[in-house]
Image (cartoon, rainbow, N blue to C red; front, side, top):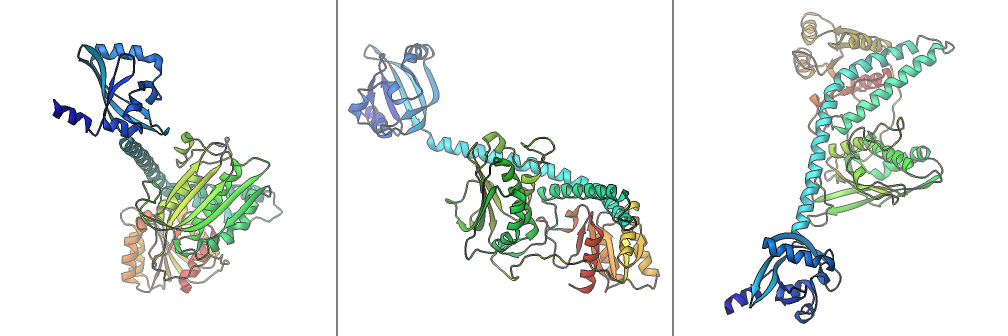
Length: 505
């Protein structure tokens, strides 16, 4: 018997014996240790003194219920002497000893189990969210090619007609509205492709402090004078590898969200940057995060904030809390896509009426071969030369031909890759540039370029597509030797691209 008593006394689980009155008649060493009371203090207390969820009035029913069923296991909470409350698992059963009845219970602290369970649930939620976003992204990418082909036709003919109609003609206003709607549709598709990480990017070594300085005036005009815009830049900030236009997208989308979340009387929008080193213990709890050196971009506002339900949906495309017609619901989905495409991650902290903070982590650029810079616009330049255009869509081929001719080049148009190859084999005509669609039946633009290069080694190549994943790596980055223009494009964009390739700039 002594051995059994020793085993109970030294058990790693708390052991409690409770009398009919609800008072403890025995507690072991672990019971005292876990609750912070002496044994004598516990023996003067009742069950409801240590269980904040168990009212005294429930005791009689509890006693009779356990007496009937004999044994039960459940979870509840215990309160330490210092007031700390922690979760426990209780295995309780009815016993008779020396002519008296007791409730005996083995109690285990399950704080670590609870934490692990909550972390697992959070990871599962994040994984489900990521899978959902990936599925929608795949769908978005699938329709982008055909949709962007049609937008190419609309934009192309709008610009061609614009040059033919005099400014005094009242029809010019209607044409401009058509063109504006087409470009707006293009932006929505590009946002979807960015969200799905299928947008082509051209990253450079970038100090985001410089780029933010460059964008502050735009942000100030965007949010209005009644909102105070603050920028606190970390000196000696590390460089990251990022397309400057993507940083602009992030800042503009977050600024618009903050503006809409702030009251009419104004508020604050704060942007801060810092260097952060994350290890296994210090890094934020995020399924996408990993230890390493990061540049942290934090954007905070003191607006309305978001509840947990809203936070669980914020990255879903087309999810919005704004009124109908006041938002596409693509802003945060786009930001999520940009961050994932650049191997970063995001944490959001928000509560109703307490504002929101978006913490965005970009990996530090370790091997910096390029000087950090800010992308600058280049004026449109016309040119001369001969371009072999290969496009299987009749409408897109016709309008692209007219756009190229309008900027000064001679066009040789082919409706399929085999026709283009045959032309290069049989015609003694100098060709400066191959402009080819990427996605075509029987042969891709990539395969075509290899065959054309074999016939015309000096020819330059420019790929075009409304769905760019076929010529990019998994992270959407183009190789340095690949030239690409995304459909739909304007005449100016095409002119700049062709000129840059032919001049080697």
